[in-house]
Amino acid sequence: MPRPSFPKTLREFQAKFGSEEACQEYLASCRWPEGFACVRCGNRRAYELARQRHWQCAACGRQVSLTAKTILHNTKTPLTAWFWAAYLMTTDKRGVSALLLQRQLGLQRYETAWMMLHKFRRAMVNVARDPLRGEVEVDETWGGGTQAGLRGSRQLKGRKAALVLVAVEKRGRATGRVRMAVIPDFKSTTLTAFLKHNVAPGSTLYTDGLKSFTGLQEAAFQHVPRSQPLRTDLRKGAKSAVPLADRAIGNLQQWLIGTYHGVSRDQLQFYLDEFVFRHNRRRQPMAAFQTLLGLGTGRTPTPYELIRGAKDILKLPAEGRPQYVVAC
Image (cartoon, rainbow, N blue to C red; front, side, top):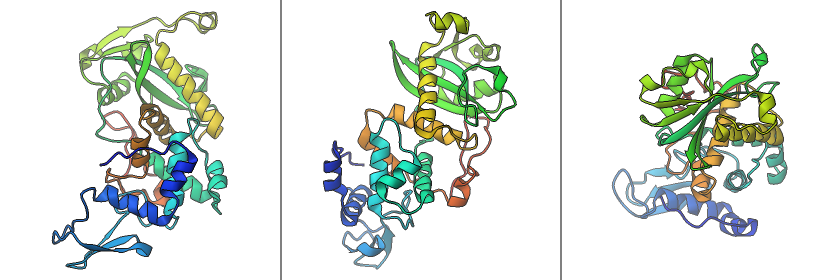
């Protein structure tokens, strides 16, 4: 798929995608970078049915939707609104709440903005993405519900917060790619399943010495457990056993509270996916923009009835991360 230059300013974006026609032209260039070709007869001439967002083959009459296999398929919301929403979600480091998106786009209903953002979140995860590799720090935290964050506090057990496992790739002293997932428990089998799915075999894993991490050596990892200082010592300047993972957890908690003022436990995994997506694509704005719109991914949009109440997410499977119901 082509990677054109990404608009750096609001004015540039408005000039590039300021009309329905411009958005449709862009979708067509992404769908057929070498020009239209009918999948039925191979003919390369077509008529554009702009109002229907379809192209029709000039030879056999077959119609093809510009938005097929994207999250935009069958949407009644203008394409310009979708493009603006994807742009704002890609460029704003803090993220965009549904209320803010509704105000900025002039949408009549809050539910429309909320649904757009959740469809974006479900387009963020590439199931075929490369695993983390090399040196990786691993830590756990709590999130979602009425008590977001409060890392490591076992006092949250029984409340509405969820367990979250975090893996952070080390690149010298800097943070590389990140993976996060809601987990059902601290059992060794649960932690190992997540790591086997998200980290390449042979990688070196640094942990805070939690007993549940025992057995990683047998799972084809090099395990380096470290003793985590007491919280009082950390406040006095002691070095964390997993400083990059701690930094990622701190950034996650600040982002959830600062942008969304907390999230429900049911929807937490999708917000984790957004945080990971933002972090890992922070230097690739055009790729992130196209991914959000579902261009080139073949992802079908998730129906409203599945998004509401997070009914499209299943429990943690054997491969170690939540899976989503594939919409037909």
